[in-house]
Length: 243
Image (cartoon, rainbow, N blue to C red; front, side):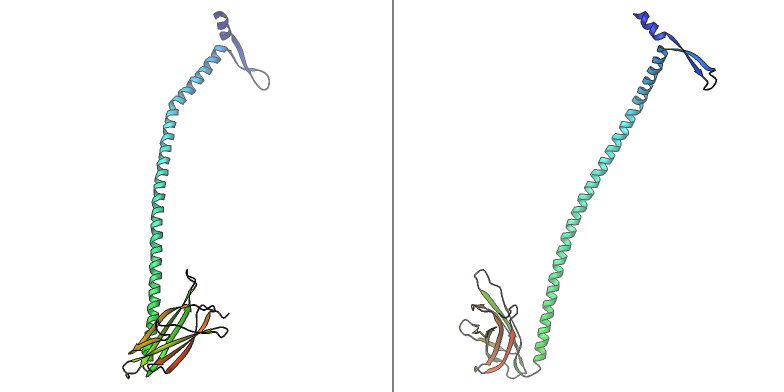
């Protein structure tokens, strides 16, 4: 058996290298299977040695690169979370500033309106006599109780220094689009609203609107302390339309 194996391995073969043209022998050598197997074995061992030598280094490099990328990803996530938190805080601050700005703007508008009113009062006081300077009214929406309220605001002004003070009453009539008429109950005890002033007076209030029609106009009548009519104005009721 061993003899056959040795014969198989070391049996020589002649290898000739011929020229492409002419057929002359360029190189002549003898080779056997053992030599071929030895060369193949050396190549395998060399390749294994190279892999054994370089593979751990490549693995270490890849592991280090993977850890570096993982750390960078973690840092980026932390930065993103911090940025989102700062953005949320900034949005809340901006919303708060907008609310403050709107409140300030509303206060400025209210102060401007009050300034305009008082300027008109001062201008009206330059002329003697008592008059209705301004008036407005609005009808509210139906509330939970199924009722509506009619709001009114009246400014009276007394010009001159005599008499020092004046008293009287104000009467309001409401009119509908089809000619309906209703007296407003302005006081708990009386239909008319009393006033007393030295320079000016603000008359404001709300009355429950119990009629089945909408008021479109108000007629405001001012009377002196004796009940005599002195002046009268008509105003539109805001938020209502003729039926």
